[in-house]
Length: 122
Image (cartoon, rainbow, N blue to C red):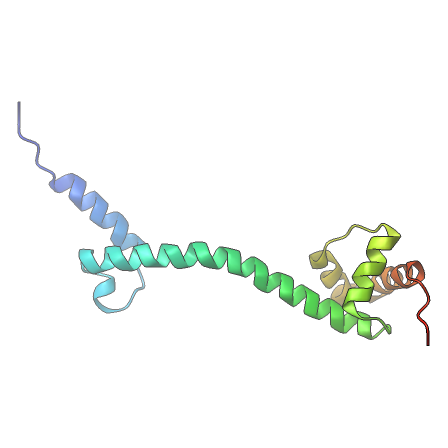
């Protein structure tokens, strides 16, 4: 059996790691041991932050909606409750975009939500 030299394979693996470590600072970009650790950690951060991004955007949409519905004399929670009771199933992202770019259409949704809520005792 002939001997297998692993230079080509090792070089290809290293090249893959260095490509992922491109833009890193110091030895993290050009020393294989450190670059491998840095790339592995960066992948962990990327995985975690893909989930955190969803949370952050949902929070942003809710803040925008709260600000927009308060102009119409409602709170966010009462608005969402009213939409649910009116049978309107539209997500927060679309509502948020609508509040910014189409205020008239958003106002119509607010009125429908208000109409489906019981009158508040003064």
